Length: 194
Ligand code: AMP
Image (cartoon, rainbow, N blue to C red):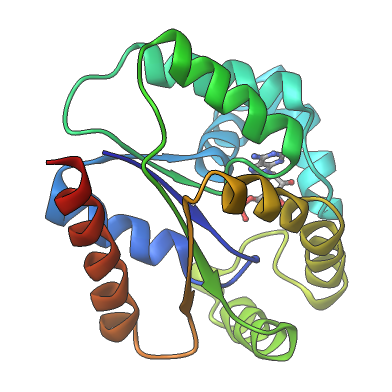
């Protein structure tokens, strides 16, 4: 099973991805986490990426795609859950191509819908809780990340709608309720796949 969790920054993709990993033994592939690992290691790639991430811009497709390629070709198990990837149409097309080469295909794209005002509130809270704060959690950067989401990332939606793979769920509910909705959609594709 290969799933993309799609949605704006702060929508809860990471939290939901972790729950799916536990429940279905999927491998979580979060490009944001991979980049933060590189920053923590102090690698050249990490240093370059940090400057871009701290501005709320997108890291180059070249870097992102090579990270993803490495992970999907070296992985066995029940499948993947992509979190924070793809972020633009070129990445979405490149993902299909990579999966195709491995004779795999995407099963489902789950959009977690949360409006901008609520997201700004959530991120401000996260920034105040210092142990969870990230260097890109502040209002100015968040507004830029939301802009990038609306300008680039959301433009992927018609691509997945055409493939009949996109489902929307309301992200402004409890973590448990959002999980239940996601699991309902996963059960549905299970039926179609069997
Ligand atoms: P995230 O943890 O998914 O919110 O990502 C944090 C930051 O990492 C983003 O604001 C981008 O700067 C960068 N990033 C993460 N994933 C991608 C991606 N797929 N493409 C480009 N940049 C990314």
